[in-house]
Length: 120
Image (tube, rainbow, N blue to C red):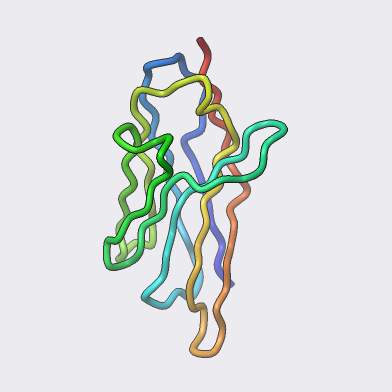
């Protein structure tokens, strides 16, 4: 069973930077995809950025040029560097793992979420 532990959420001011981290534990096979999603109050959860084990990335248009995703495959960690934060980036940020957790089983696992609040 895969578990995700997120950290890094905080209250910051507009224009500040923040780094989120997520560590996956358990039995994990490659290839897989890890990434970040967010959910603002009253809105649906949306993609922020994902990265495959081979390094392929996918970003939401709203964060391109400001956010950078990175991962360490050996440690099964994924980070999200967020620069030039805006109030509209305020949300609960969720880490997600998607991939094989056994030879026959594919799974999608979500972290518990970490709150990012960007004030004016």
